[in-house]
Length: 449
Ligand code: 5GP
Ligand code: SF4
Ligand code: MG
Image 1: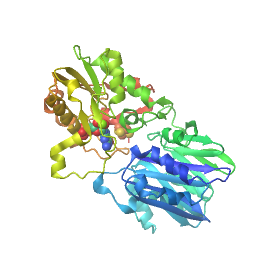
Image 2: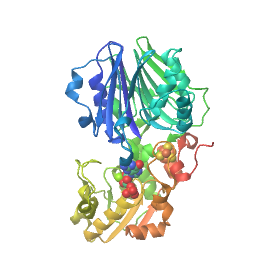
Image 3: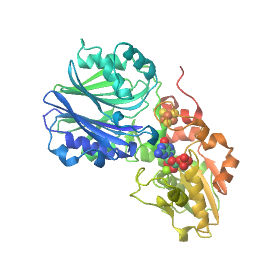
Image 4: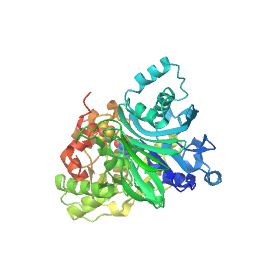
């Protein structure tokens, strides 16, 4: 996953700081690196770097520059494949002017496409999907930039939400299945494209609508124009259900559905499917389990307590995983309030179990508080399959639910009981028709072909 943001001011105002702010609201989608690109005197300019946005891009320096159109990206990758040359947006000045591209997703036929491009002389500087799109455009320099881009997008398979900066246009596009979220916003003649609506809120923009699956939106001096990657594939969609479970911020609205409401409904349904009679409190694993825990508590009529506290200043990359840190474990990030757990029976709700590490540590910490019973409830179905569409960091053999039965996993994490949400309840809680959702990491139902 990654976060993307773009802005275009029809009134010719500079949008660079707004792109910075938009990315700031999308930081949860990627912390490895960040970058912003804009056009300056007919050439593409950029600011970029490693780490969180405020380390990667100098906000003050940016405020001194000007650009009526700009795009930006926050990148998430497993730490071992973190590379300077892969920071997005990828930028170039080609025969038809400046171009910059940033994407979220995973183009599944990228190896094949790159091989064809290399055979025709393309030299790659990075291993990003965005650069392949750039080369496809460059090799069609007899076409208008927008037409060359549309032509390139037609060749892609897999998932993508992309923003593209052209000399005087912003393009936002979403793959025909709609795996990755992408919304459009507007404020005072400035148009925005963002991975999530929370990034529109930060710049005071109004949410216009989602970019439709397979739609290419071109925003320029003459307004907004809508093109299509190919003829609509009908009602079949593959919106990522994991966005509602974990990835997105709860204050975002994706494909018309509030992430907060979806998470709360997951909790309510979990309470009905896997009740805990006799439990005296419900607590969520912050931040990802909190909202489902509130839903669980409300439906079960058990008091919700903010009984596990999270250090707000812990990011993903601040503390090195040295031996000492590993010994101290997750307590750096999460700490239970002992008095609330002592001699009591508690329900702990988290959004998902991947390797099972977080669950095991938190249950043992709560046990150390002298808890009577600890019942673990997961507000999504067991993660049984890797994602082929962009969250590619999970290997099948590392997934706790693949390696162990429910009873074995319950024993391993040390809980009195363990239960999950069903796939039917997940789909119902999200509230979109089943044929519009991807649930492949739970169900194994990948896109055919
Ligand atoms: P585990 O410790 O079981 O490997 O991971 C589960 C925890 O990680 C859950 O609390 C969940 O919120 C979070 N999580 C689930 N999926 C992902 C992911 O793709 N990336 C990151 N960084 N965290 C995840
Ligand atoms: Fe989302 Fe899972 Fe589908 Fe990947 S496999 S797109 S994480 S629902
Ligand atoms: Mg979590």
